Length: 134
Image 1 (tube, rainbow, N blue to C red):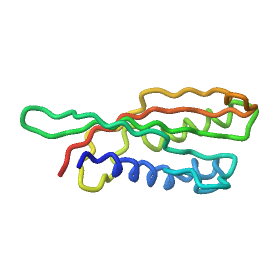
Image 2: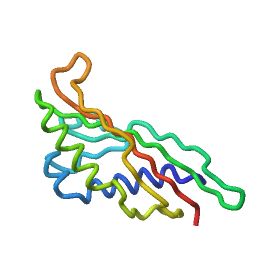
Image 3: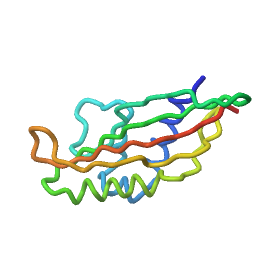
């Protein structure tokens, strides 16, 4: 088992536990799968890519997660604040990943931009998590 789903669950739990982030979102609006009727302001895990990161004597994987941040704001300020709180909650965090040891968790990049054919700003963030099975 590579641990990709377990990393997503740990990231989602860490984001939901970060009070400044849920306050900006107006509630617990962090999703693995976007529900119908989702609020205008939310975070969704949109992509998970897993690669082998094993060495000659140890099994390991690296997981690349893409987070989509959506807002209803015509200003980039809210998307920028949400991105900052996501980074504060996750970058370098020691998350409990079921069945795995989290070796590292880092933000690779973030982009804040207006949505295509939409007046509101959002963000896209890419994280890298390295794990080893227990």
